Length: 237
View 1 (cartoon, rainbow, N blue to C red):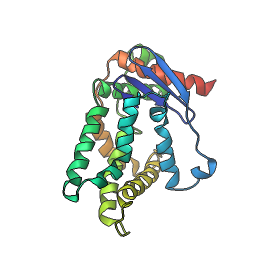
View 2 (spheres, rainbow, N blue to C red):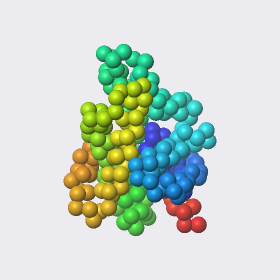
View 3 (tube, rainbow, N blue to C red):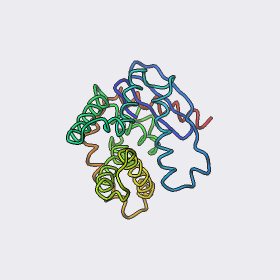
View 4 (cartoon, rainbow, N blue to C red):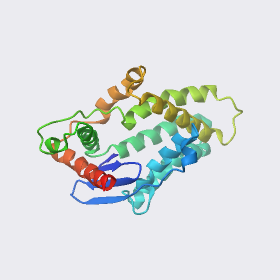
């Protein structure tokens, strides 16, 4: 998770946030009950919800103002119910654009590239050489959230047009929730690199990362590496 002031690296058990000013914060991730992990559709949404814990917790990586912005985004399907139908589409688009501008402000795109480079360095066992700038693993990642969004958008569009239940006040929230559940199951399926469909399914997201990442400077990669090292240190302890 790249932000304007640093990079967060998250494992199933721990998170660490390295800031560009050199400071570091760490914490524990909430766990998912074993029985939830066995329920298709539910498990993916639960994991996505827990992944926001470092951002939403009072002592996490986000300020109080940022947590308010995130809360508005999460509640936006319900908030849009107060907007007349004729303006709802435009209002949703404006909220989405505003959130993206806020999310990708400042050096976020370069730190996003540094985040991917740090994770690739761990997988390639080249952490030291990457820290020294001797190797530069790819800034494009097959597990980036951009790839997930590229899967989610068409699923959501289809769900909006093929929703089988009569419209109710809950429909604006149920459609995105159902889309998220389906997208997470598809995400699990294509993350198996032996899957012959994985390359084609990931292609749109990988291409989109040319826009959502930028080539990081060495110090920005080192920021991500500090967060990664903090998580690995706790995982391997």
